[in-house]
Length: 386
Image 1 (spheres, rainbow, N blue to C red):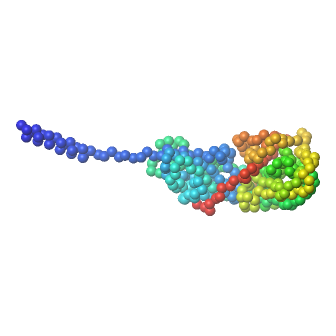
Image 2 (cartoon, rainbow, N blue to C red; image 1 turned 135 degrees about the horizontal axis):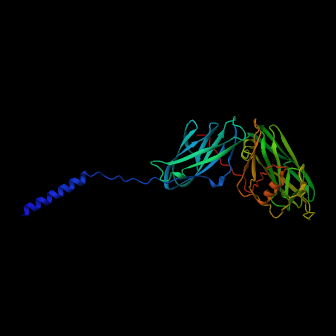
């Protein structure tokens, strides 16, 4: 009786083992990363301004994912546009091109990574033309479990290709306390297109050592206090130039005191004379003599040549540097010759809102693109190409 039982048990074990070996194995795979692509919040929501046939414009994106992940980026642009370069956190990325579609290997990253896309448009693109960059990201090795947040569309607008040169002369001056001197500011446009929404700001570190007391012509100047003024010559045609005379008064003794200035325009923030820092300059002023206080400089009233009457602006308690842009106007100098207004959704400062309001004359909006350069306008270095 024992032998049959043992044999039966052995047979059962053999069958069970054979069935277990014959069963197919279950594959175990890692979950595909859930990626999120978005426009960099610091870039704002306004269209990217790109010069036709000119410099590279930055399209700033942001990619986020859980833990470590590898991904690819696909970019699609209109026929008149092209992608000059792509980098992630400053490192160049390799892309392949097929017509208007670019596929880029972003490599492996952890957490959030910044993606800078260098956009260019052909010289044949019309000023005022608009388009968009379509960007789609995908994880390597599988499908994203939530693909709805894997793509973004970034609008852009074409502006003219103009190269500005700016200067203030003399670059150094020495005067006695309470005396005045005259400086001459000049902006020249080498073209080939008009420079639109040109704006230059002048500023002292404070209003106690030197002050700006007069401007000629004054119609396009908003003198907010003796230490800060914005000059808005607006549009400078190709090959044209504009000048402004600034009267400066010394209030107390000082050595190499700086009057700083910088210029911006539609799409030309980084191409004054082809260099990132040439839109910035300083004049060194020295005041000699007694520190005895003289009469405080007054801000002259600023009036438009047309409109409802003189416009005055003064707010000595709010002269800290800002970097707000109230609006950007694109002028189409091609066949149509129309203006397109691009509004900035960022909240403007009180001073610049006052400037923008004062310049709405006769239903035509003149743009105040005043930006205060506290720590300087930053420009990311660009790579040589794809």
